[in-house]
Length: 285
Image (tube, rainbow, N blue to C red; front, top):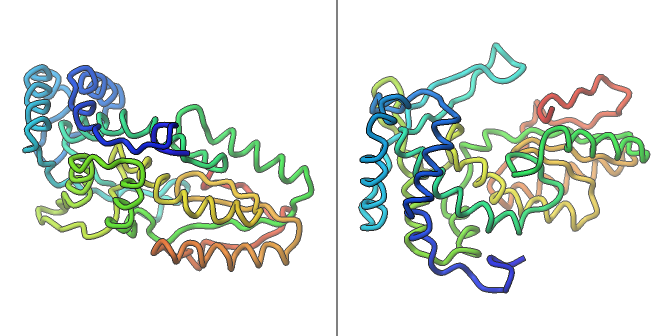
């Protein structure tokens, strides 16, 4: 699929991002999602009191190409289903969340056309329940062997240039690409110290899940082209196989496809197993 369904790239998009109606919709969604503030200590309630002025300022800054995101606030939170382990969470400032949401509003419909049916995570109209139904359909069709995979620090290893190149295949608006680069390189603050982000996209950023689906689409295609039954939810995925021999081949081919993206499988959290084992697919479900 091409960018707009007609074979043309999108050449002008930034004006749609900073359109006041889009910024107002973005603020409404950010407000609904709630959450704490960023390093500027501005909370949702604080922003709401001056929302009209802030949206007007954001509109002008984006229009004049002078908007710059500030570093995200990094905190460490317990991993889901693994309370003894933590993962970093990046919390952008409220106005930067509004900008990310405004960007996502415009990018998502374009890239949805390019995503694979095997991808279920953070996509409109798709859910974990649908992913689980597909897994169990494959099991009922005789796929009793499973490659259950975990990527090593996916959100920390996304290569900025590679991601921007992927986005530029659909979007040629230089200001959009520059805005994305600024978001990726904004850095983070932890314990009062600022750190650069030379790779990765922060978990917690509104646009990060969309970026993850863009980045992993070549992996989806590579696996599908080999006929594998892949089910992916963001950076977690499984492949259902008819035999252990097929599962071993999936493991090897997946490793090659991921290494081409600068990614690696987590050796301790990736396994080949039979459905007779205690499978719960907790990463997806």
